[in-house]
Length: 429
Image 1 (tube, rainbow, N blue to C red):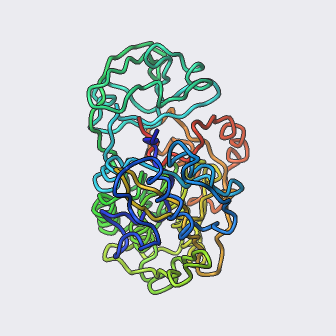
Image 2 (cartoon, one colour; image 1 turned 180 degrees about the vertical axis):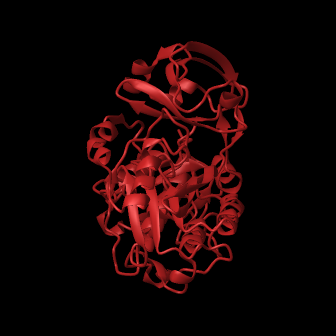
């Protein structure tokens, strides 16, 4: 079965969009038929050529596996590779080109044996039914939260990823009132910018933007936000990446340029390295001075355990040149990226390269540590100055240090339950 949850991708070099030139040519022939053996052989050939940890890869017989997914799992370097995967080509294209998926239009976080809504998307059925951030889901299609968390997981509880699939929800609103709704899955657009605001803090003009995913629509969305920030004279930035698990490297480069502008222009943003068979593919990427850049010397970034891949690439790339202050929770830890190889309506995405910044830092598989701990405060909307993570960021801007509360927030952030392996780029249902 192909997972609807795309692997986290620091550099999603797609057939449809991304780096000029698309996916690199490899010594693998796309199957004429889609027999299991031919699909397996294609995946094995791709892995033998481009896989970053090819020297750690075991030998394998393509005929010995009942699916290309099973073969891929066998080939992975388990010590570090939690990310290589095979995805549905149509679903992936819809996400990266249009920021769309089939679902009810919400994101969920498990805390203990309870499920909470972290976001709803503006054009989705969940938002239309009145669900909102901070609501607690008591049951999904008759399964209570504990059953879901300790059983087959959230995706299975929501049913088939098809337009029209019925989903029955029982939930509590923020006031604790129990409610229910029957909604139906539809094509949902994820707002790439979840929230944006300009806030006055201690004689500073602070721009806040919650950025959700690195996809094609993000270029225009980010440019519009930063244009407004520039017009309003923003001189401090809070970049909220707590729910951003990655996407296109081209968008990461664009965002980094919007932040740094003339401060980083022409400097090395990232150095991409491949396995010993593909050193000719190694390359440097440099910062550009984007037209709506803020030319900042400091940026405050809100992170969580879902912050990964392209988000971490932006953080790591800015570190040598700006004062980068991380607020919230330690990031996931994915300093590697993949190319996409199409076959039989699928996309094989083996990890193919590692990224380092201008001073050679890039070994953060354990995640990037924060400067100030803060909880993801579901009692308040994103962008509300009272929300704990944003409040901590604003405190840092005003005082130049973490608050007393920051030291106490670690317990709250470590109670989170992460489901289905943590490596969910979409994180939406």
